[in-house]
Image (cartoon, rainbow, N blue to C red):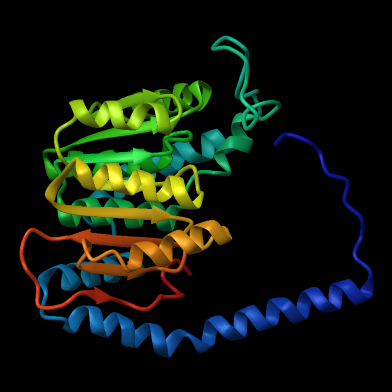
Length: 295
């Protein structure tokens, strides 16, 4: 990251092909609208209460309804705009040598990796609806997603967030963001997930909500999920980001969907949600992918 790329004007033929590809993508997404409607109805009609609760979250997300937290969400988005306009170097050398993903990168550049407003609101609404006591996030970046999550915990009146980030520079910015938003229900763990997660989980209360948004590779994703399951409360929700980001993530998602320890699996195309419930259910529910959740 940080290296400049030289761009060249597209030829008329290249422009034409790009327009055709864009049209095909739009046509495909439009063709999925009736299918998405049927899947949403299936979520709402399933007898299991967890599926209906997911359906209610999706309804709120479609309306961009943060309920009584509209002001708090607006404050987070104001922080996002501030970060997006900050051209200062992310890594100034004060916390050691910059990692490969931080070198020559500005704070504004790093902010581009933050979850957009709609997926971040999804996390907020899930936390509001399912009210976890211990939330774990892998991949703090600059703290936007964790601000959405911690704001939801604060609105619930209980719960704590443990967030993990390998970059000390990104974590420093995240702490500043959270302090500015008066969020004091967050603990921070800096280092590689493979070195920090297992140790930290031993000292944390049982995890009932996890957001895996980092180290997007096949085996690490499965390993981190396994760690969450070993240290989980009887009820557990695991949200996986970027499930179609690479071939490795697509493979991991196929494995996770088949894991019988999760009774409910919801596929939002870019985000996968798996839920374990503390009771015997008559069957597993693995819902087909929704294509228009964040459009």
